[in-house]
Length: 111
Length: 114
Image 1 (cartoon, rainbow over the protein chains, first blue to last red):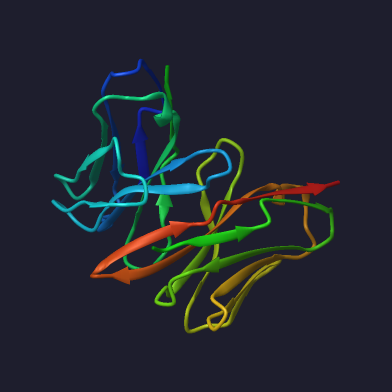
Image 2 (cartoon, one colour):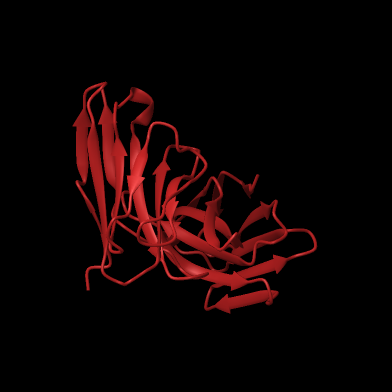
């Protein structure tokens, strides 16, 4: 039982490049979330999903897209990376109104 | 929109003293309030949570209190130890049109001085 796994763990992108972050969970959780963490700003919700095939915008969705084609996977895409998207990204999953389990994070640097 | 304010942003205490972190939420429909601890370079992990039908919950040296009328909740750590040093996040969650948003505070960096 691996819990929540994010890939990759580190990535450096050039401005304008695209990439996809993968989040996989093996706990059969319905709800999945993508957050970004910046110093002094806590965890800000980018997008979330309440089930396979559904997605919704969070607090800071601009510049990101997501997809949930399979229940266990939640993908976060950056179509044209910008330096302002340099951050640590965390994926989380949960079932109902309960504890959220986080992945180990992805440190992304856009130069 | 929904908002969770957390104070203080940094807190230093002497080993053995108590630490208190406070959060205020804006949406009275929020009904689940977890606290997470994040050690340097690691993922956030749940340390304690409380639901809106309970006023206080304890787990060894950690306790959380909830005041629904004032819309604030607090984390209390007693007999602090160096390993309590970390960033602590509060969160508020509710059901919105069948979905479960999960909004975090901005975090408190706790330093326990030996």
